[in-house]
Length: 462
Image 1 (spheres, helix red, strand yellow):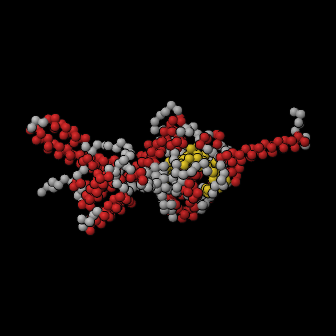
Image 2: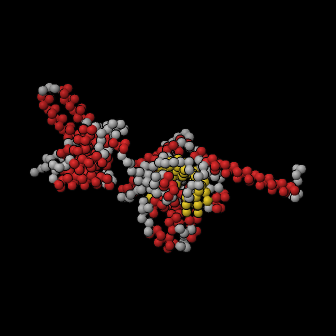
Image 3: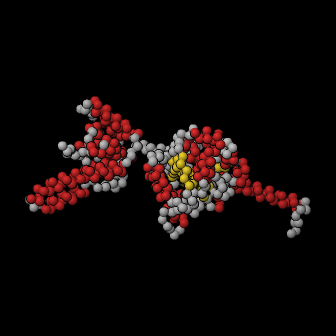
């Protein structure tokens, strides 16, 4: 005999559990489902109880409950249920803290479609009697109302309904930078959905800094996707080899076995993908990431070396507008894949020999600074390059203080960058130092010129 029960049983247990989790975690979706959902559509009793308690709480307090509130409810309001069901309800709530939502959009679409069809069927059955009574206006109103149920009602953050969500601790899931002092400044590292930018002039070490950030994430057990737009995949991989093994770039081939042994112990996974300069857009990267996801590749960090070399997704009259759009789409990428995205930007010529590079030195499009969550500059003068020193300046930080200068040790040969504790240096003191150095240089040149004149090497009358 054909089963005529109307419920979610044909979709399976995982589908129903995902639906229940979506209802607690996404208030706008819970609003939609409230209009069309019959609790009895859930085949499993513990899920019926779980969702029923959510909607009872919403009705009573006119706010969407937090998981903390549900935990309290499930500790005190399940006495009428048998012990096995109580355990299932509480266990499921605990699972929602650690379980990532998978196929969320599919579950939303299918469950809404299923529930709306049931509401429409009910309306059609009622309309049969109304048609016999010639109540055509009522039929129309009944059908129109049924069709409107469950439509998207997300108008944004509802100040009253979403009160509790404003006081929930949001998980940023920061990924380490590999520098303790920077992690302290940025609250653990760059977080999910955030965009970080390294500013540096040509040849200062943008790509080295990005390789350092990627390698630090790998060593912390994270999976990294690194896009390179100017170097080959092999050369980029060698920088990771050097950073992880500590072996100089020039000695990698002669010490290949040692490098391999060091790489075997890495807990994270790395994918390096090369695209020719200006041939790939953010949409190209998105398509590649989707292919990785389809093969069950988890993505914890994305690196783009570097954003200025991406092709725009749309054409603008001015280059600065194209660049701004690229950075906006990169941040959107971070939000979509719920992971940090790191990229770099080249300074204009004024940044070539600056002791401290500020956002004013960013090339072409200053507006891209507005999009980023964290920006640090990397500056290395000619003297710094000889001494393996330099400075990192925190130019923007949405999660902590900025305007801080940190001295660094940098050895490009081993892709090693060490950030030291700040010495209290500020932009004002750095600029003063620059001015003093320039004055000393001019005085030294003048003294040399005077001595040469005294010795007759230069004719002072000319």
